[in-house]
Length: 50
Image: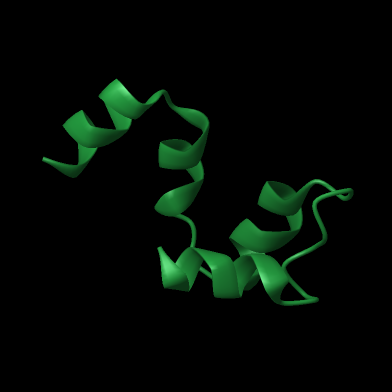
């Protein structure tokens, strides 16, 4: 959870206003795995983690 918050705060990550997934994916590959999980419902998110 903390890692995701840090990536969200980063300026290069793109603020919530600007599509963050577009500017974040190519810049930092680390947060990429969090992207699909965040959009998915909790049930699916837990399933993917398992």
